[in-house]
Length: 85
Image (cartoon, rainbow, N blue to C red):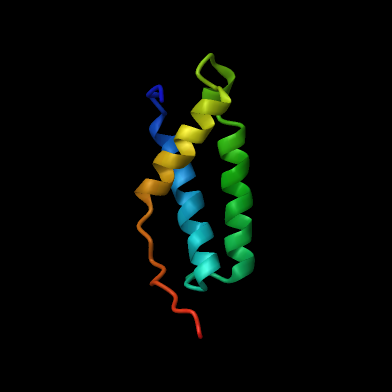
């Protein structure tokens, strides 16, 4: 995989997107679910419209690398779930 030099604000927003999503999914959001969904929409728009994507580095591979890097930056707050058997 080719390393990309992502702008700090782009990586911050993508990391915040995953953090907000996990909080909503886990039911741990400090804000209401509606506020969390609005935050996801706002972050999605900022990420998609970032000037980085307009340059030569703005490839689908770069988008995937950004997502993978951001996911690694968000600690998993979800404990292991046991299945009822």
